[in-house]
Image (cartoon, rainbow, N blue to C red; front, top):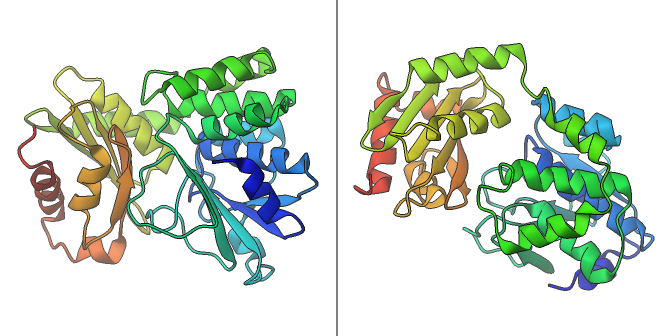
Length: 323
């Protein structure tokens, strides 16, 4: 896709860049990078999200680059039906981004498409990070990103690819090469240190204590509420066990149950598995190697007294004997 098309569409319009709920560093870097790119063409925009900023790495990133993220709840009354909404690091009907007032005219995402939507501009690529796509816009337009923007984009790419070992593609490596000359290396180093809080250790302990193995699949439930980012980190941690090739971690929270799945097994597509496992009771999707999902509190309670067994069986059935 040629980003010039998107720029032309947005000229003279009120633009909001919406990340997925509970935005992570890749989503924030992508939205911030797009916002900074738009500024080069006289287009102002606001970054919005529905949910919470719930991880120390995300908070540090926002503070370090002085990124202005606005909660949808605080400006919902300002949004008009003819405002332009650009979905970044997600797509409508993906289960992790809520509809807001306005016209969703575009989506820029690196996740697979499960529900087709007719956007005026749609750039979807299977790459390691959405920030890679945004970086490509700068490169294609011959625009050198300033130091803050370059560093934010590179940090987003590194975080979503797990330091270039998960889902990484040649396009991600090209983005790294392009950004490297423009980044602030000291800032990047500072961001990557001390990203765990003391309370996170409790979640690790809970995940270890509750793990159950079924073939090469490891299931673990954290009995207390965990933020999205931590659940994803725990699923990566469980996947690091020699015996585990597919990790499913979930946490019961006040509003429902959040799931994260990781797969190193070629026969198990994480995105397809979680979508099938939660069909009819929740929503989910993502990449072949990693995906997430959510079941509302009401739906989870309807599963009865043995809800955890029902969840396990749903995932095992969705994997169809591939473990």
